[in-house]
Length: 255
Image (tube, rainbow, N blue to C red; front, side):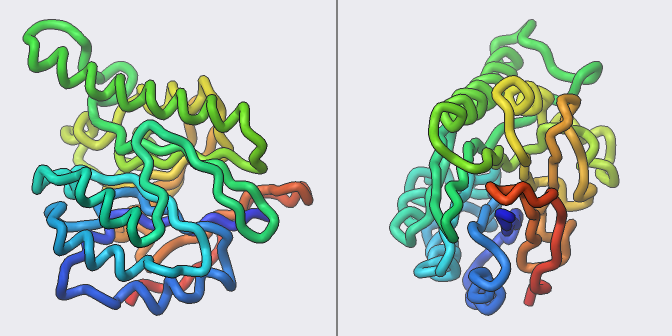
């Protein structure tokens, strides 16, 4: 059994430093990897990124992350990524990585993603240049995710996970105002996941959403925004070489 710990939208700042580390220190007891689904900071400042970095530095399990919209707000996403990478995290944007823990090879493909909406109620690449740019940006993020998942399909790994900030499906947005669904995710991400294949999709962003969802192709989707899961992280189990059935498991509560 491969155990995936995940959380997003931790929105850390100087006043929350140290609040997650006690729970993160328990990860070797219950998980093989920690996935961070974006919005790790409040405003994307280097100071806030440093708080996150100290929270995850020298953890006993691999850490893989994507950035969220908050992490871009200060217009220094590259610096935020650099600070987190210096702390040992794998930060993905249209990229794939394979991490090893407990004898398992865990493949993760990641992108922030973007909005645009879902089938039947989505933005189209038509009209004003700014609208075309919006949709092209979302499509580019989805194309990067698909390419990264396809890369994992050519590599030796036991499971493939799609890690995003924006949601690939509307299911996990239930509880949010329907009017803002187009700003919370895009069907293009789900298309990429179903086309390339994945064993699990994890995202954040929708603080008032719902944890459980599924793509039209049957891939399990989990909204791990901390306000949704109500804890420091949640653990999802995937079958490994032993063929154990998938499941969702408990994890420590957030401090």
